[in-house]
Length: 229
Image (cartoon, rainbow, N blue to C red; front, side, top):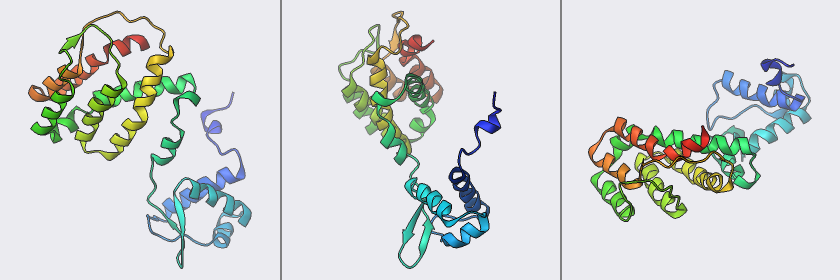
C-alpha cells in the first residue's frame, strides 16, 4: 500500500512542474499583477523543456492563476476560487459520497453563521424574513422542503452575512441539497420530531444571540441529521 506522501506526489512531469511553478511564485512572493519570467527562463531554472513549461502554464491559465497582457507578458492574476467549482457542481454527475459530503457541508455552514448574522442584521432584514415565513408555524412535526422557500429564506440569511463568497456558495449548495433530499440517497427513516421552522429561526434572530441561533439552526436541520446518522 502506498504511503500518503506517495499518493500526493505528481503523476507526470507536467504535474510536477505545475506544482513547481506555484512554489516559484510563492518563493519569489509574486502577487496579482506581477509579471513572471518568460518560458525559456523558467525552463532553464526548472530544468525542463519549454514544451513542459508551456503545458504547465496552460493549466495555470485554465485555473485562472495567470493571464497574458499586451506589452507585459504573462502576469499573476487574482484568481476566483469558486469559478471552477461553480462549473462542476452538477448533482446528477457527482458520486454519492461527494453528494453526501456537500449535503453535510451546507448544514455545517449555516449552523456556524450566527455570529456574522447578529453582527450585520438590521430590523429591516428581520421584517423581510418575517414576510417570507408569514405562513409557516413556529415549530412543526412535518418535514417540509419547498425549494423556492428554501432559496428565499436561506438566500436572505446568506445576503445578511454580507459575505459574497458565502452567497455564491449557497447558490451552488441548495440545488445539491434538494437533489440529495429527493434522491433516496439518505435512506435512514425519519423519526418525526418537532424541529425549529424558518419562522422559529426568525424569532431567534429577533430576540436571541449567536449561540441560541446555532442551537436553533441545528434543531432546524434535525430531521436531515436523523437521515445521516
